[in-house]
Length: 189
Image (cartoon, rainbow, N blue to C red; front, side):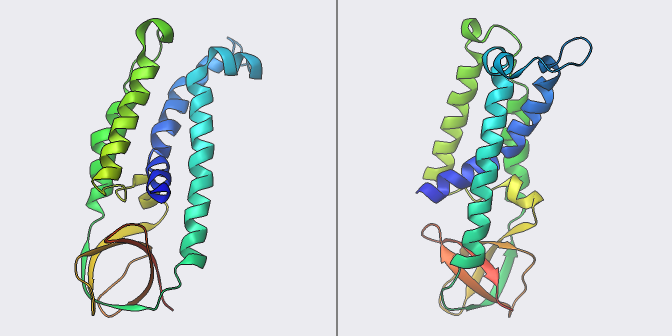
């Protein structure tokens, strides 16, 4: 379950990067002097939260990458059929991430509750994605060279793998389960 949550937070990296880019000019005075950390943390909460979530997503990404490199130690499986599922990441990006950047966070956050609503929406989306096992639809991993495939092996059919690089029929994968039919994998050399 925790891996699913981490993957969801990783998928939100670009949302928080876009929010950061959108709000960072407010962290500078008219002559582009930095307003200071105290002001940033107390008056520019969206920028602070964006930085926190980007750092958290970065940490989770390095853990995920390490788990793929060191953790995928199950016996290798031979791919008998491959279907590309990379479109799922673009769907997540276009459906959720881009519209969420348009949240109007410039007004008084206490009065409008916009920041609270943003986090409620993010929580609900995350809950749905984790409960429906769609957490693997991850635009951040896609931009870092990971691909999503639905594959058949000699022993299993219809499993989803997240793998760095492209795979073909007759390739061998070392897999480690994340969920029932979802695995992270590395190509066996």
